[in-house]
Image (tube, rainbow, N blue to C red; front, top):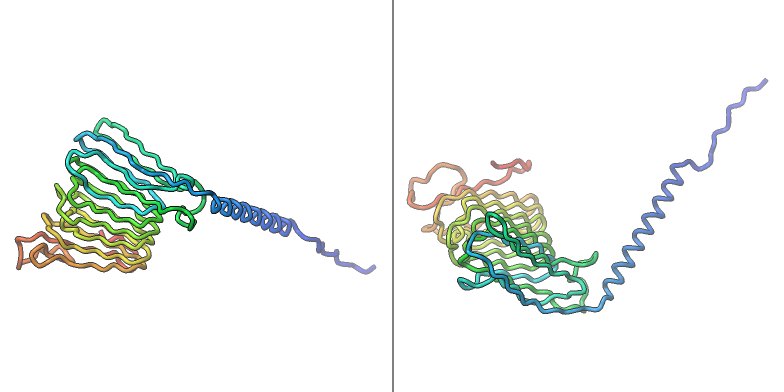
Length: 284
């Protein structure tokens, strides 16, 4: 009697049906997203003016910004002035929300201007320019927290009574400047800009005790000029991007790569620069 090998089942296995099902699902999702984007691109623009004012007390407070898809400028206003928001936006694609909240230790003012749909509000060529101008009072102590994306931004912070600032700047072009000294030296300035182009100018006029810049890609230009009033630690982590560091003037501060005190100009503030290593280790 001849022994015969059992025939192998050559029918499609469950894995094949699973892959086909997954492919159909992905195609359906892509088609749905494409339809939504096409619809949003055809939405008729609804330009709306922005003209808001918020009185704030003279106690310390926080200004929190969550903004995308606009041309943004921020600057110091006159003493005693309210927080002002001016400009225009496409209300069909951007939603503006503001909120003032008293707190036991001060107050918080929030500004949210974000897209309503899945696409960048700037992509449609038939909509008006979305622009926002924020004016802050210069005689009120403030902390600034800003999350900005897809924006062209100019933050002119000189003249403010700024306590500290945390800036998350994503996918855009950002200028942060201190054209005149702050009322009091800044405690810290943290700038997180993963893939943005940034320029920091007049850092001496802010005199942050701790300046930290973290990037992954894209260029950064950091100008340490200005009227330094104290020593500072400057941390730079540029990832695969480039960081151009412009030192202070000879009569403004002394730039050092280590903690050794200078012997030639002991009367000047010392700026200690720490750079992240090539292996990505924390310089601290």
